[in-house]
Length: 203
Image (cartoon, rainbow, N blue to C red; front, side):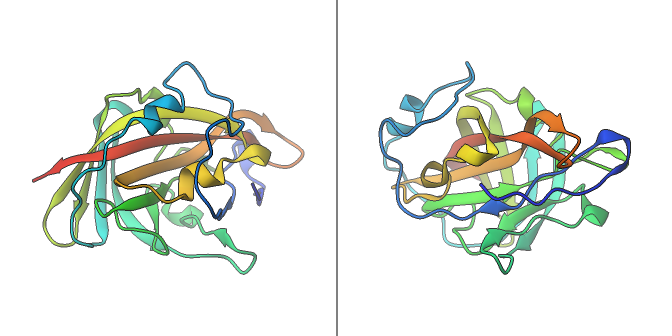
């Protein structure tokens, strides 16, 4: 996974640029799962209903104390996914090149772990466990409701692109931030924390 480190004060660091991947998840693909739910949890998700496309506007994750607005992000020139600027580290980025949350496919939302001032929007994302609820308010007035299936922490060099961006037969959601130890030379965290969820309903 490509990463662009950022020099920050006080030893803080940020989410690196996330490399786009192609293809689908293959059973046996290498990963470094924590004891929070492994790859089998993703294989067993049944085909489900999905929602018409509508841009995400806000996200709420009660178990991680997240209540934030969502902004669209695109790609950098090198093909990596943009992240929200530091001046709005309290916002979450939605990769607009992929599905909108609630539509069929893997929808990707990214947020900073911290910034130069301290904790950022996904600082407590590590508290999320399988079964937790994620709510995404959309531009059509609906709120998509997701249930967390699995959480993993992986080295950035071993980022599971197929599992994050790969085609799925349900409305999936992937939340990404930094994790692991901090490298003071590269000004970056070693790992990424990834939360996988699927649509369970709407209101």
